[in-house]
Image (cartoon, rainbow, N blue to C red; front, side, top):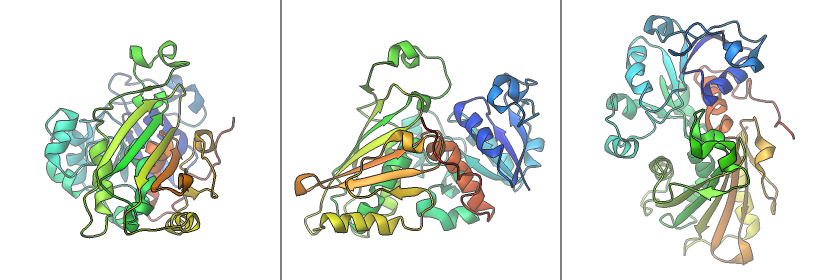
Length: 350
């Protein structure tokens, strides 16, 4: 049985971790932290977990956390980098759901996140937790940086094309839309129901902090000698709670000529052994509700009018494959468990 703690259990990714781990047959959650809610029973804050946990929130304590086999950090950016080093020194394994350890370029991280990085050496050692690319490294890792929600949906959509070198890497365009839970469990005027119902809007079109993570991941899987990946990324907010729909555009390279059937086969072959990537039949349009509450990414690819622009559609649940469920997938890999353990439930419908 794996002893697990969760640092930062009051947000959406924290409660999603609790929901998934409640029925995981190889995990026991022994601590969940919140300074502001110290002593409050978990089931009092989250009635959906009544009968599953008798834990109360506690303050973060290094010694208590160090007694665990693995610690999840479901905290705002900047928190994990201050606390993780002490756990790493004690041999604890860590999965961080924030952006603290995702980027290898520390000056870039500091520019995008507006603060000085407190553990740059650890950031360089951390393994980026996208199993479909880094499974072997994740298995041996002590510190895993769980990918962001937009980067997960976007990279999985483009990986087959970029790996094969069949698209122009410097002309990639991503238009992606997320449910409101992607902004976290916080009180902000522009996130309340009355501001978002019956509304659809873009934000951070001039530059979103997930952009360097997307480009870093895609550059790491490019063929040698290819022009560096450059992405234009525009996120949008959808008037719904969960889900991301990424519509991705790529121009075929001058040396590549794939028929629609070859394009479909490229995706099917790339993901044929991946338990959490579902390449839909040709001509399909994935829907966010088909992945709600699951660790699944569903993808379709098309070449409209047989022109030189390819369109990939990729959908995930931003709190699941985009955060907590993918974190559990990483944990399963790290401890040599069946990768799908605790993650096999079908999507919620309606």
